[in-house]
Length: 260
Picture 1 (spheres, rainbow, N blue to C red):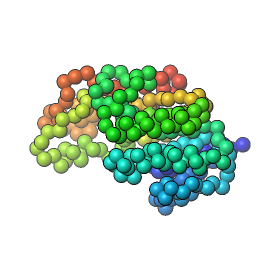
Picture 2 (picture 1 turned 90 degrees about the vertical axis):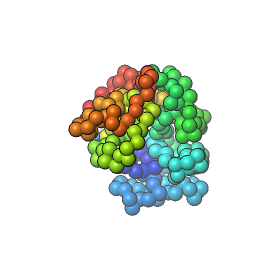
Picture 3 (picture 1 turned 60 degrees about the horizontal axis):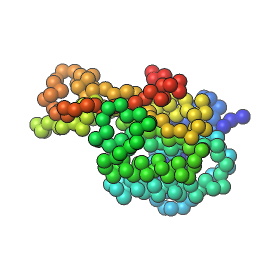
Picture 4 (picture 1 turned 135 degrees about the horizontal axis):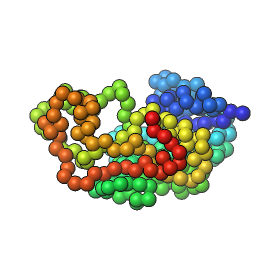
């Protein structure tokens, strides 16, 4: 018997995830504001900005996965994308049967002043409105979905198609950029897909848990060599002279996940 998965906020990551899950006997239903922009087997148009509850063709799901996204990159946009939308989702799910709710979050909840090895046991101390809103979103998930909830905190997502470093160097205006950290914490979009698939296959979504999802830190200077190769890092960047801020992935590895 196939398991139904509902993905709310269907976009690039969900497209990649569906490719994995359809091979493993899952049926995917996706809610998106713009179904014409994405490829999915069962896409349903739903615009949370209209403040109307969604309706679904089926009423039983193994898991609900929420990919939140601010509609604008200001405080109001984050409030709308993370908090207001979650309230509406909770209302919409009242007549839906589901085993678990997986909320996609961000390691931005850790503040810029939190240094060293940052594991799930470290209490987040956000230093900007983005981190504060995301932390509020996490607390709301716990309060609304309780033992049904799993929160996956993602580090900065990237893929092999674009590079902000290449663009920065190409358009360099002569003013060196001061970096917030000596290392970058990141997660490839394909690895993100693998982690969510791993969580579903191993029933981690039934453990009322919170997991940091990061490949492990890479220094900005190493990343520069990897991407640019023929120039000097110090010509473009100033790095802080302090301890690195590294997102721990120890818990994820202990659960059995292996990075490729």
